[in-house]
Picture 1 (cartoon, rainbow over the protein chains, first blue to last red):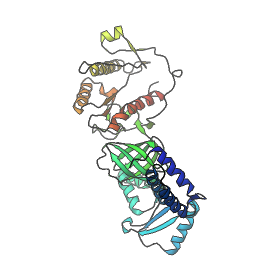
Picture 2: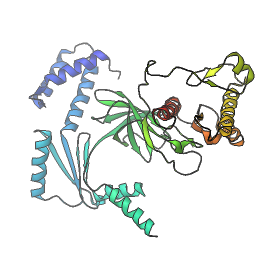
Picture 3: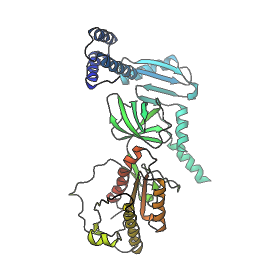
Picture 4: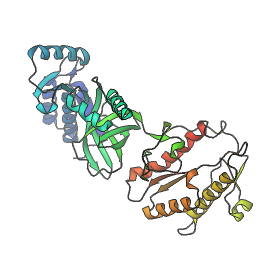
Length: 130
Length: 263
């Protein structure tokens, strides 16, 4: 679907209206979608498609994916949550995964930021240097 | 053997040991060397992007939710969903006297199989050139070696000259002849007091590789290659390479007059 400039602008306005104290409010998002679908303004499908994309990107930017070579301990989880919330603000969604191929260390991804302290990445770095 | 061990030790010491923040994104769509990347929230305009496996891209279009980039080199191995990293560096090319006599691609990587290039520094490709007031006026002739040109429409050092004409009328020949003539003058005056040699930068854009090889062979035969740098973006190279090749060649030249290379 081709999304025009006006539809993008409308979607952006709707998206900003759904924020409360800088954080996306899920209730407002649901209400917005319901109301737009009920009133059916001009180009509403294109605007809603872009709106969905903006919401998706916002959710991604608030999702923290933590990969560890071994199961993460409760204390480490708590430490990580505290330090990352202090750095990126409240409202983060933490997801923990175990990936033995990392060999050791942690890989944390928040939106487009990646903190990679895994043995696997260090070995890869060493390989490119050689 | 001890130097080898020291070398390995230095490389291991230089490898990253601390955790650093990286800005990454994923390719959303890719076609013909142009791609749209999702993520890369900290990407800068004209920043080099690392696509992995030595593939470099250039961020040209910064949008609200994505980044438009062109890819230099072979992009066929890249797929939707591939990871891209920012490098924090503007597009730059290696510069220095080590490039003389070499054939390089648009990023200054060697194409002639003569080993790595001993670059003095890196110089940005997109840099605002000094204005006309700062430049020295043209005061010294530059002989092409073609009597008709030198007599009727002489060219000066620091001057731009456009050679236009139909195909197969000898445009490249005029350029190559000038380079050979300048190399001859350089050789004759080598070591002379206050003599400033002329160095050539030949940028081949969209030519057949056989044509580029023929020009290089001619320059080598005449002994002009030691004063020449060849930047090649052949017809088989990507459109991005061909677009950036003249900027790359100009950067190599610009660096030479901003440093002590040419007093």
